[in-house]
Image 1 (cartoon, rainbow, N blue to C red):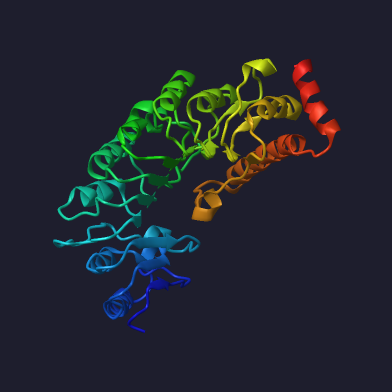
Image 2: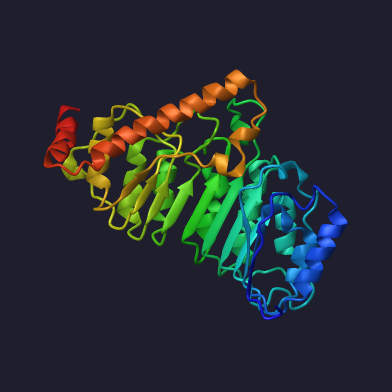
Length: 361
């Protein structure tokens, strides 16, 4: 089938776990026989240096993605991601997914003939890093990839112990290069530690990014012992970002000051609020606050996605510590489910109930 345009390959193992040379040789032979490919979707750990090098020579390839789901090969990622790129590499590539260390990705994007015209970039890394590396990556991409409008970064290294290490936290200074992108409207970040960002910095972020459409700012850290934001951190986004469709923040909604209803101007376009591992207090008070900000049809999303990447299952913890974490997450999600039940009650009595809860607060 030499005229095949799309190839979606699904296998239950990593390319690194069996006869590496045989699998890679077969994959390279397959790709060379499909000159018209426009799209490839591979298991995550099949996008090796040699395979990406071969894909870079395809004249029509515009999508290179991976599928999540395989667990066994997480620690079998090749040590270095270093495709060989030649002049004319990736002539029409727009959508790229990479699993590698940030150091390798920075080098890859700085190399001659790198795919700087991409519009969407999805990055996974399971290797421990310093926040400065993320800052360097963002600064590099903001300078090299002027057409980029979607950026997803999953920093999936799981610490051996779930203790807060301030030096490992991402800060506003770490993230500030995202404000230098010309066209970026979607930014999603996942990290084990909560982002260390203040309400004042949230105000600056929102005010400088009016074109923002999708922001998930690490709403589900697995080290969940520290908060810098509460529900009032939603207000700057409602005020400054009229196009915002999705928002994810890690917040403490257990004890907060409720604004009078008339002071809260609702979002105009928001469709989803992702709360992840955030902490909810009294469901009535939280629902009352959100009801003043949510536009019609907006959904509250309370779930944890680390398990999609094998994250929680790979925690190097004692069984009891892991059980405690899973219980804490389940309890937090349950409280947000109660908030959602109040928000989406279809009866008039339900609406009056949350308004009454706000007045009592």
